[in-house]
Length: 264
Image (cartoon, rainbow, N blue to C red; front, top):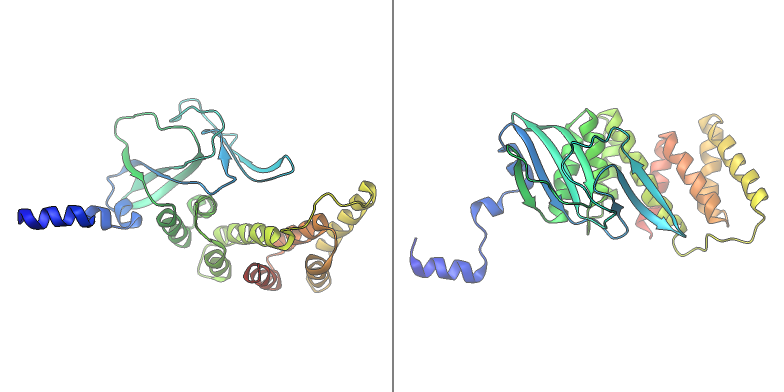
């Protein structure tokens, strides 16, 4: 290489061929075995680096996912941290055959592991959503969840497409519906005070009524739940309605989620 060109490239920050590769391409070239990827978590996501991930914290309550199959011979130890997200991949023949996601902590050096380093969160999100479309095992389900944790990534438009794509495995589509409903719930209740003045017992009765509607035949229950999700004055009741709509896997529910998210 011409020395003058080399200096110019360094000054301009031109990417090397390896740096220019997508994460998907790098994973496809990874030798068989374990690989690691790290990226920035979105605000409000926390984890203990082991078996607990929390998000959506509000009034002291957080949504949480925990892994009861945690083993003490895993790769790191940590108190609760606000990131980063850590992906532990098992690669065979250029394909991801196993994926585990953690938040927080630090990697413990281990021989035979390919560390793909820290990647930009949007690139990690694109890789994970692409992986979700291609894989019919638990990998697709885990990939959807991991994508929702990425910073500076709006996942719901692609998750909505995944949920509607009949070529995508059913398990992954169900996971996509769940996370779209979570985003729609946030959009529908944003800016509303959850500490409403209604009597708590009365709210419990109304929440039970929402559940009862979710058990009715679709042609009766889904339209009623949609009306509640759009218009009810109590944000907790709206959240319940959106949750049960997310469990219905009804196309009208997806249309509602898209409408709520588009208008936020």
